[in-house]
Length: 388
Ligand SMILES: *Cc1c(COP(=O)(O)O)cnc(C)c1O
Image (spheres, helix red, strand yellow):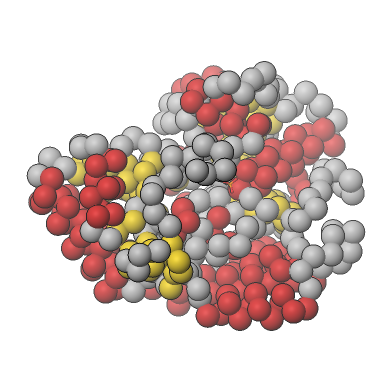
């Protein structure tokens, strides 16, 4: 009997330990882990540098409160700002906290310049911004909000790709547009670069803010530090989380100078957010994943992997509908039932995870090795052959 609440549909498997791209089950079966905690373990399991960092920091200082200076946080914020569009950073503990803090920053900015009714956030229908109350209403998903009313107001929605409806929904009350540059839970659906550019132009024209949720697609996951970098667009606010802690819970909101002006002392806070232990880990992850050489390797290997996945798709057009994504944020959209496919992959010792639109997400660690990718390709090909 389990005393855990039943809010998850868990697979009947647990793991003893993990190393790099692999997980070892209770029964000593070795699995290739291409879930990695849902794009969280950027450096795989048990990375020696992260073990060393956490050991060293744990002997010095874990937690002090944001009532005091935290040099480790200053250091990580500086790195994040030097690497990106951002001028300021606010640390949290999770993705949902980061997206909600992003919403707070947007609303507070307009409040601070005297536009008190400008507080509606426009989001994509069936997007994903986390599971807290405001975040589920930001998602515009019936399934996620069912039974959790009363509705949190201040959100409006448009369908992915429906530019007409988006333009129509911008009113005097609109404060910001918030989108995922690549929808993760939504099925690895990419906003094209030209679209992101138009979105920026539209926001400028309407004098509203652009929030890009990089919680899943950010932190080098797609081969650039942020997935929107390729489009050259500069957002106003960017929530991050998942990949930045490499498995340690960290969230953050990055923002430009303009919107940061609203966040005066007392406007926001977090007990745990940015504590020295989390910040030590974040600094180490950041140093590794943001290096040019590391990014180059992701791009090289991901190109190889994607090319071969497309070959498998061409070989089994009745099984695979499309290959989606960039870097190591990859989706295999299927014609057949995703649950059967995921189960078969798992029987062959490859772990993957579902997303909407009948997509199987493939999320290797960013430091995955070529032979591990080859192993995954072999398993995917085998499962396609067996189900064909
Ligand atoms: C996972 C995710 C979140 C929520 O993160 P949590 O840490 O689970 O709260 C928010 N936005 C996006 C795009 C995500 O993928």
